[in-house]
Length: 205
Ligand code: GTP
Ligand code: MG
Image (cartoon, rainbow, N blue to C red; front, side, top):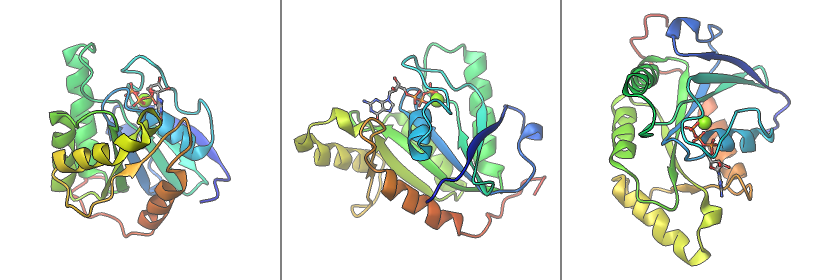
């Protein structure tokens, strides 16, 4: 994918404020600190376009980025971060789940898990939500630069098995530090952008 333009458009927690122009959307989900915002910057070759932080809980709204005036990347708040007040977590979860279940512009979700850890019950729950909502999903293992080469297959297999994915499922290894996986991930996204619109009961559809 040749990225000619990428720009931040808006931040929202209220569906009434989401973009109205019906461009396809690709969303990024995963635990706080897993590397969602970093991955988005890496794909776009734009340091700091999406705000990142060593402290979990950085992204607190749905952030829409317009790419090539043709589609959006949507950076979502992370889940599973204990230090955020419960009321805030409840709001994020409600807004995110509603977005994932009803947004007809949503073409694909990139679900990120940390390559170094066994996926958590929340990761499993997220995949179940996406499965039930019939959203095409790709699981990406982040921070693979932190793994020794010899550990890599073991880690990718553990992720696949814990998430209950089929034996031939390819968990895509990714590193924002080494820019590994960029080409492969763009290929999947480009293919999915050609897919027809989802049918949901989205009132605004
Ligand atoms: P929230 O917005 O809090 O949900 O986090 P996030 O998932 O957007 O994570 P973010 O991109 O802000 O990255 C969290 C931390 O992980 C930062 O310190 C990043 O520098 C680091 N990080 C992200 N990707 C990688 C990677 O591929 N390799 C390594 N080694 N570190 C990474
Ligand atoms: Mg973030």
